[in-house]
Image 1: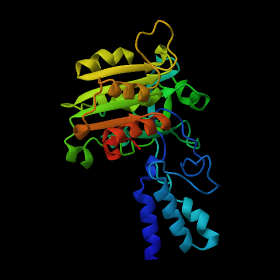
Image 2: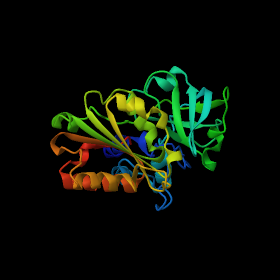
Image 3: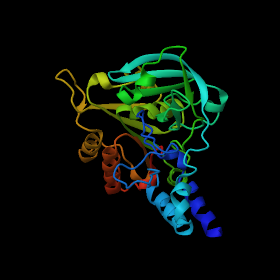
Image 4: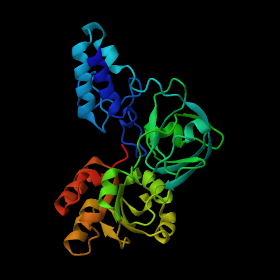
Amino acid sequence: AAAGCQALDGMAATGMEAFVVPCGHQSTVQVHGVAPVATAKPGFWSSRSSKSQALGAIAAFSLLAPRRTRRRLALKGWGDDVSFFDSSVKSNVEAADGLRLVTIEVPEEVSKPYQRAGQFVQAKEEEDSKASFYAISSAPGGDLEFLIKEAASNDWITATKGGDLVKLSPAMGKGFDTDCQAWKDAGVSQVSLFATGSGISPMRALIESKALSGKVCRLYYGAREEGNLAYANRFDKWRQSGIEIIPVLSKGDDSWQGRRGYVQKVMKEDEERGEGFVLSAKHGAVLCGQKDMVTAVRAIYAELGVPEERTLLNF
């Protein structure tokens, strides 16, 4: 029994609420609010933030559980205790081509746990609907805003109008832990931010939360075309707060005078030609976007001497 409790404790320690990439996309949810791994066999589930720990804990527990109840017990608890609260849409406007900015008035039960940029909520249309996961785009305090990609899976929320009700969970997830021990130990004083697509959503929350005050910051923001750059109308304000902004387009037309390609490539170019930003001893990074981008940026940092624990994700 004691060993069984340890196995379950191991599952809980992985952070069950953080099994998504909360950058404005819907996560597929089939059993108790858990996103299945696309390549996994039925019955195996991923926390994305610590898949190996979660699978190890499940395996340890399965050795102890009778075969008849093994699957049922392994799945129980993944999202079972999430409560949802009626919340009212205040506005729904275009933020960029293919992206909507949805502002929602929420009860205290939803907003009170929101303490750090990078956290997210579970959301659904009806009580029996499957949950979607959306990063919070506004800084803590007041109504919650969400930058949501227009897609068939998100139609139920991107088509809402003022006064419509949706159901939201309390804010959850670890967010961007800019107070982490790795940053404290290094005395991080300069920070690079990397965002692609709707990954700019929690970056806006981070910038406007003032969590980076006193640090020298540069934002690499990647999008397909200029019209896909959300929050372009806020860039001047961000610059005034000390954020250097480098938009990068992968498919910009001839009128685009800025950087082209992908954020990881542009960052590497800057370092190689002596225009870099990285002082490795004091440098930290925050990333949100495609997995390939995160992997590539971390590889560049490894070459520059910036350890992975100083490159923060929000899940």
